[in-house]
Image (tube, rainbow, N blue to C red):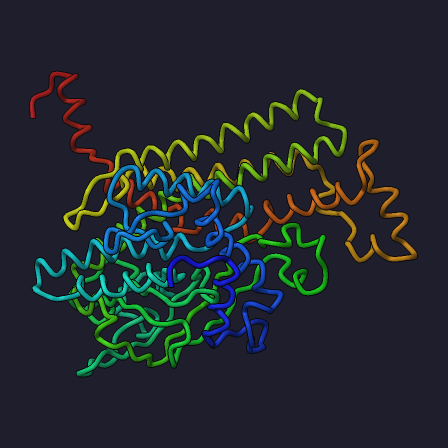
Length: 480
């Protein structure tokens, strides 16, 4: 079939019938429901970008399996250049959407499973990598969007998967059959889940022999029997159903459309299983996925920051404040914070390295530093944007009142800013800033790709403190 356009992607979603629920109702079509349209639009842009002359160098690649042109979101990294182009692509698309475009997670999952299955086969004599290559060819050829389903609900965080009171707190194998496995459990906070074609399911933590049933990795179509998607609430999500201007980012939304995916005794054929009981490989898979996903954040979040900085500057102009020294200083601070994140993603890409499978991985320490910086810089950028915007960000009357024949004239009169700037322009910019700096959007910057503590744990492991101690001993003339 080859690479799809955005419209062909939408058409392909109409051919699958996932079980999706939102606000207590079953959703007939994610393509047509107002709660999902922005997320579908953002993902569709990734398809159009790969075919657009100004973006195709970044958003497309050449498959090492087929030699054909494919979407970079289905590509396996084989060089530093691949890693760098990925970051540049994420920034470029983030600038266009001002929101999460969702395909990064599955892309990172594909790269992680590619390398780990190769190593499992080398040690265990299994055929997981061969199975995975067959799936990868199909994903590349059909240009499928795949979710990266890693995070489990986790239950009691003090207990290992096998020690939980409810065994389903972590997804696990409940039956091994001649033709496949049966799994039960859930995956939580999964970005782009309802508008993907399938789910690449991975373990979420390091494991011991007791947790072998939880060390499972597989692929399933989004509409496989026994899978239910429960769509998560978002800040101001009901605005999608009853207004346009008040949404802030009507076309692309504010976050990635996360969902809880429930697996109720789901059958997975062996051909789509890539780990089943090899518990010692659970942590390498988690580490590589986390590294790849944290590498992203200095790209996509910088792209979003670019749009936010532009909106902040425009709003300052719409309010007649653009000439104030403190406004310029705040804008400079926002640019500094954003570019610092971008530096981190480029650095971890440049210092990446080849794995035994021949694929490339970003530098884990620098990738985790990048993501930890995001948990701080994104909030500071948002704080500065809110500072420039003023209190009206929290008190602006609704679009409905602005359009009302009785009170609309007052809203239009008193919400006006600088001379010559329509009230609607100011209102649209305020709503865009609200959407990008309030609630769910920032929570994703904090906890997406793992909470700050997860990065701190990885940084401690990667810090090579023994080497740093040796440096200090040498300088201080202290013998070992």
